[in-house]
Length: 107
Image (cartoon, rainbow, N blue to C red; front, side, top):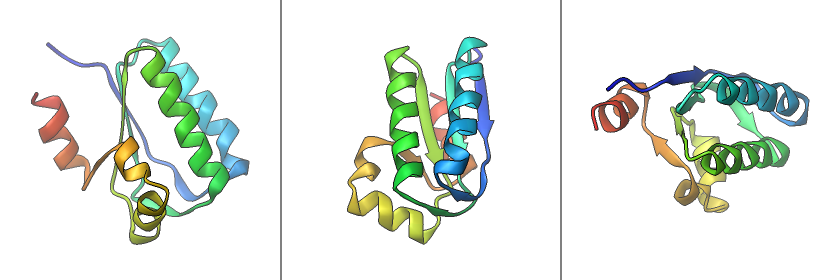
């Protein structure tokens, strides 16, 4: 069984200026029937509160459609933010793309 997977790789700072574009991208993926969305944050240097809020909104939207959203490759700043806000317990976070593929795609 093959899973319809799409990977988003945002760059730079995830803040309110990128939030709308980010949500639109996810909307299009969900409309296209994508079942699993992986947000690879390897090129993100910083996430502010509006960027984090956007991730939460997207997560609720994806789960509401009974689909899956995962995150991988977070840096130390983002990891600290996730831990301080307990988002590390809300999101499925993987060390890197290989760990995600092993855990999710081989299941």
